[in-house]
Image 1 (cartoon, rainbow, N blue to C red):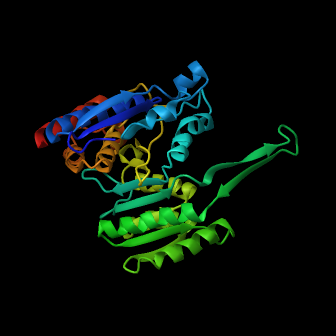
Image 2 (image 1 turned 90 degrees about the vertical axis):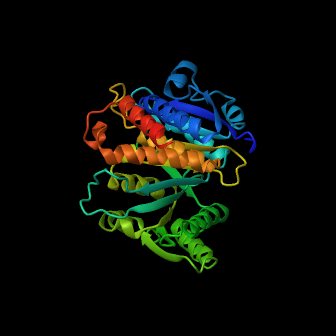
Image 3 (image 1 turned 180 degrees about the vertical axis):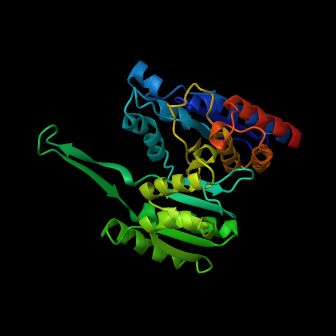
Length: 361
């Protein structure tokens, strides 16, 4: 891992598929501009894994991919998927789910904060600043199940959710510690569905109550996922830290991103908090094959993913400079990609952010 004296970091870069290959170069451009001013040395190593690699080799990533990635300080991912050529589940389980499970990236962190100059679909939105803490290694995405009697009238598909005390407790404790460190509302909202899922979500509720007793200084609340999907629209600014299972957290964090202006602005972190393995950072949008090659993709989420990465490795100054540059460009409103109502290209937005880094640095 990185030496504190040299402040040098090895970053694995997986651009992935479609617009992933377009937004990651812009994130690296902004990151290089920032580190020239803040000091850390970054060594980027690209890995061409994803749909193209699968079609060429039959593997989404190299057979020794996990071993090769294990020696890096962090992983920056663009986007995966090209469903017209390769089924989504092949790509996801061939790389993303392997990394999350084998590197024990059990926290999926998705901060959602209102950005200057960005119009929300909610006309009255103010003060939005929340974080979704999603369990990232088990739950509904555990990969347990199977299919029987394929192709017959009696075909059966089973998908089994897996909730362990260990996995559930640790994601909830992370959420409570985060609420304490943020110092804002100091509140954790648990998302459940225990009125219908009478084993897994009743278990989730029980563990939440137990962990909450360890944090008497933190407010708590609990909502069923269907009600929560409404409250995120009706009163999103009332939430601070939201903790949810793998499936519920995945869906609700995309909804929250749409509320604050679109998934082209939202970044996520896949964390191993104990740092036994490198953590992975990504824009939460997909590979968007419908706009790939048109130079329309918004690179802001990829730049903000780089911010999260720099925060994780301890380079707060670099992260702060990148974030300030993004906010300056968005607030000015002169350079906007189509998702923000403008006509700027991916590269033009990346250039504007890099130029803002130069000014602010």
